[in-house]
Image (cartoon, rainbow, N blue to C red; front, side):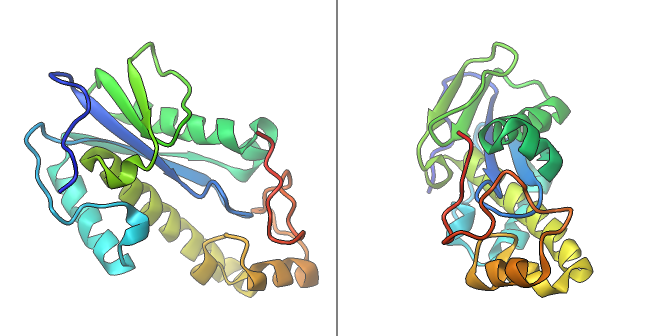
Length: 200
């Protein structure tokens, strides 16, 4: 089972984002505070779970968490501040909404912008190591998937219901044939060879 905490004796929140490498759609992030003695053997990095398991676990996380929230940053905002800063902003927006104030933050990845002077630690592949980050990865992924599924009904030619806005061959082909939508991130190299131009 994943680890329950990084900091000893502090109210700890785990954060993760979804959609950073996409060509289209908002970036989502979640913040989750779990009970100190929480156990759930099924919790894991959302990328290692089936969609059915992710949605089952989302309901369990929302039921069991001390507090949880989801933050969103739009494609327009991404184009203004770049995707890295947008990821941090989405996490901060999730943290802003928590009904319980955390005392420390753990974040998936290797970079983070400090939040309200709270101590924080970045953990590479943290969504496969800590329960609260795994929980955040599941919430961010499922809420973003819901959003992309809704957009796919408006723009079916881009296959967003399958690729969730990521740069698949079918998605890039649709861009070349139909152009971009208001939901595409203009600061990315949308057609290229599938490699994104990220303004880091």
